[in-house]
Image (cartoon, rainbow, N blue to C red):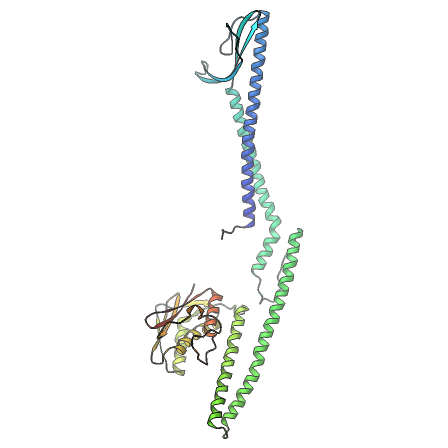
Length: 415
């Protein structure tokens, strides 16, 4: 994609290039037009001088030349007139000067004459350059004034748009305050402001309704699940239940626990999607990992080791940090062997958890998808790593998976 630039800079840039192009074209046109006028004036003066010389010869008043301005010589044959530029030495300036030369051939009083008149072009050329330079200076000053005036004027005209854009960037669905947009006397900006207000109000209303619905469903599910759980516990404690019934009831009890976990994890995903975790603090993940290791070792017979190169401190919501670490360690425990050690490695910008495995995952690209499971474990919801991925996306972390030397590696790189 091309590099993005601001609207004001883009319009000013176009104005700048357009103005420079027009100034260049106008200067070139003025140069050649003025040069043509001066050349025409010089030639008109040459013809006028030539006519005076002819008239003087007819009257017998002039019979001599004044080189290089005027030359009159008698010739044998008449020729066509010649109009050209020529260079002649000027003794007063001790340099060569450019002259415009007109040579005509006339038969006057029975004799053939060649009449040559010349006019100095140097002064005209200097005058031409002076006009062009003056034009450039005037156009330059005018252009600079118009450029800054146009920029300032555009900035004033677009000010409501820029302010409303800044408000849109800070718009949050979780905020209770309505978006504060300013009105403009420009019709399009005013209509845009009204449409944004309608859209944001509708989005916030839909968000609140969806949020309320999700919370109500999650809350209402807890009560019947708790009642079912209590009834099953009573049923198990009764004396009249046989072994087959006990196995079936225990299976139902496990499914209820899985349903509770599923409901809890879906609620977490929904809250992350709704941007409800906005509290940021510096969380010491190295310390949190050590606490999790102690808790897991008390509950299960697992071998966990933490190798820390440097303390890992990340700015994020502490609740999400707890879920991130807990889900990664739980995943390693669920899919690792009981007699094999699980190693957690951290440095100042990365966390990696490795557990033993016979072979690599079949579809590693799908491991972070919701409800995806490589194994057929009944107690797995398929949401643990999906929540890890969602948390990483929320904070722009980078999760990854690799397999090396019979070890599964789940890593998170923190920016």
